[in-house]
Length: 77
Image 1 (spheres, rainbow, N blue to C red):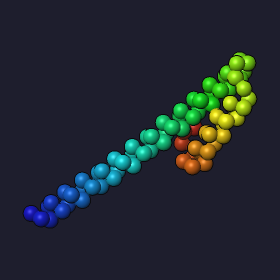
Image 2: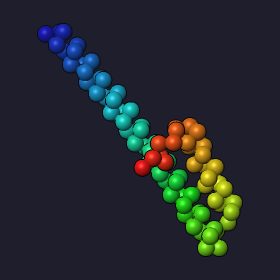
Image 3: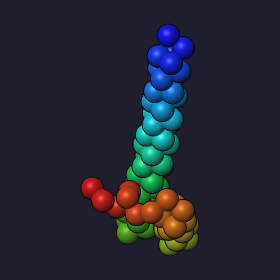
Image 4: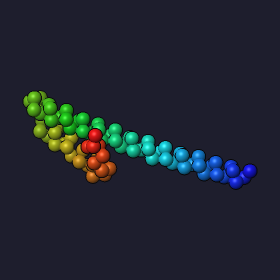
């Protein structure tokens, strides 16, 4: 009986670990998508003359930092 409980506990722990990894991955993808959206909005505002080139540069820098840290998965679509 103890062997069964040990295996069940191990399997539950594996499931929790995999779930946390997936949650972290989804949160990272959402953060990247938000940065990409902000870049698009900044660029659009700049082109419409209601935004600044500096805002676009800052949005680009934030996105590039995210990509450097987490990879370019946010760019795949």
